[in-house]
Structures are given as C-alpha cells and as structure tokens.
Image (tube, rainbow, N blue to C red):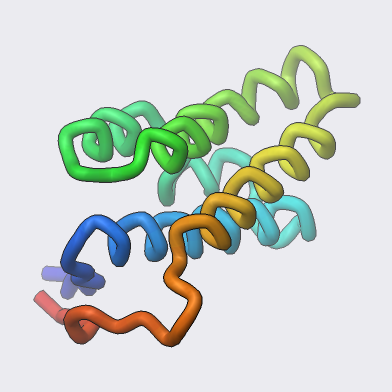
Length: 117
C-alpha cells in the first residue's frame, strides 16, 4: 500500500495562503512548460477541488481562481492564442490576493505539519 502525505493547515487565513501558494506554483510551472494543463488539473484545477473548497471556509476569490483554472484546457483547445494571457491573468489574481490577505508581519498561527499516513 502506498503511503499518503498530507499537509495540514488550520484556520481560514492559513488555508487561503496555502492554496494561493499552490495555485501560483502550478501556474508558474505551467507557464514555464514544466507541467502540462492536465497535470495541473490532476493537482488542483478540477471540478472536484472547486466543489470541495466551496464546502470549506475558503475565500470566494481563491475558489474563483481555481474555477478559472479548470477552464484552461478549454481555452487551450478553443482559443490557444489566449492561453498565455489567461495564465498570466490568473497568476496576477493569485499574487494580488495573496498580498491582500497575508498579514504584514511574519504570520504564524499553528504549526504546519507534513504528515505521513
């Protein structure tokens, strides 16, 4: 049986920050050609993730970015000349939201744990 790793964060701000960091990392990897759109979809940009996040106390703007990320494959198929601009737009949204919600000083609530299961 494969072991599973989980990253635990507690509280609304920590959850939004962690998601935004993941979003930015996925989009930068996509932009650089390291990951493909379908790989980003396997990690986060999929309808299941949107549905799961909507049931949690996650900022609506964060969920909207994930939702728009699910549309990147369609954009690539239908309007490939707009893909780079859409990736750039999502990156800007995620970075701006992270700047907006992250407290000014070093911010720590609970310890963040990487857990093996």
